[in-house]
Amino acid sequence: MITTKIFIKAHLQEFVTGKYNYHENTAVSFPDNLDLYHLIWDLTQKRPVNCPVDRGNLEIALPDRRLGKSPETYNYLGERSQDLIQRKIENMFFAELHDELDGEKHQEGIPYIVTVWKFICKYGIASITEDALLKDYYRWRQEVRRREKRAYSKQKLHRQSV
Image 1 (cartoon, rainbow, N blue to C red):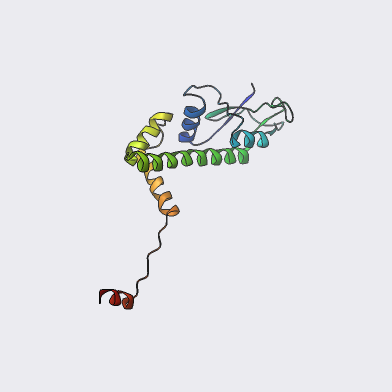
Image 2: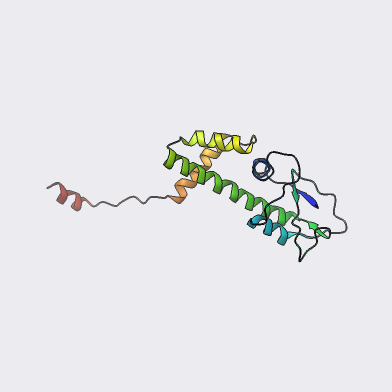
């Protein structure tokens, strides 16, 4: 298994480690049915000659497929690639969080703060606060479920009261 290291935000690293690596400090191996697996495979490239040793907070086991790129040769992820991977993981993180918040509130009646706390404990996230995740959810909810104010005219109101 060939691995590489990338640097991503701390709470995303904890999420990925908790979700796909069961809180172990070894290389994270993504299932091949994820878009992230295929994104990583597409972004790997030959290591430049003067490239330093990989550094980062997330060690990834590179995809090894029968056909195509060999991970022994194609084992480098540049800055742009790391940024794309981080954005993909961040989208996965917030999609799962928002889905859990909506589901538990509307189906189970569990308060948002309790759901956020359970989410943090489930994945072992310590680098971001519950309030920050809750505020992000409220901002997202306001943007997605934007309500337009109704425009009432005085004439219509007068007719209804008569």
